[in-house]
Image (cartoon, helix red, strand yellow):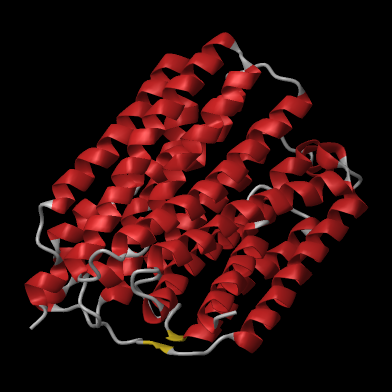
Length: 399
């Protein structure tokens, strides 16, 4: 196997092992509530903390925290997930658990630092490679769900929960060790290259394109919970629906990443690569409309089979991810695209901090919720059209 693609597979496994933490604690819901003597509402704080951590990780990306040695940066990011995973089941206080879940959200910084690596290894193949790596987020979700089921599910004995957390934390470090052995290091510059005219935050393109992925993340991080909250299915049907959503997003990430690769081959100039990015993201949002209408019908009729179909199609919204995460090296000058990756990630991931509260606190009807999702898909297309007419930073500032 080509060493570059071996790196992609290893990156994917590191991402999967890290994102196994995403929903694991909430899958032990009844046992956690009983162990800590908390309310159902308090249980939700841990997931909110995790999602806010995802957002803050990109905010910290503008600092020197995730810069310097690439391999050491990856080890640090994995540790933000693994060390809390070791500690969580032994914490005597619930608020300590919530704090640790916040730090676990930093695992998402892998997405940005791996984007820098992929930009060095590939050109036209970037979306495909990134699609495979991003699929690890959802393979990780499945892995976490399977581990919790193996331990006994939401009412598992506490000693079994402790074993699962320790095992999953150890797996993260085992995967990191294997990855470390076969990965070449490089330097992510610590000094800020953005200054004056080349400050990524002062570029209108950064703000417009950053928001092209905002609607996708809004849907990705809330659609599953919103759907399950508004249907009355059996436990096995709910489990199948969750698994369908995870598999769908993983597969669409790979499929649309491959499409981005095929389109990128036609023109590997900066503008050509950017056109391929916009095309894939626009198509993903367009197909998302179809899935959302089917899902709306399914929720309204409490139709399980139709819900499976709607979820499977709507998962295409994740197809925007591989294209979006290859934008920085295509659109920005080489010396500032690492900073641009984190800037774009910060803007788009602001959805993580906003969407859950809006969808689950302010939305009280299925129709309102589904209209918001449809509006998000439309907003994604509108911002993509606006961005496609803008001059790229690399065209504006490169000599």
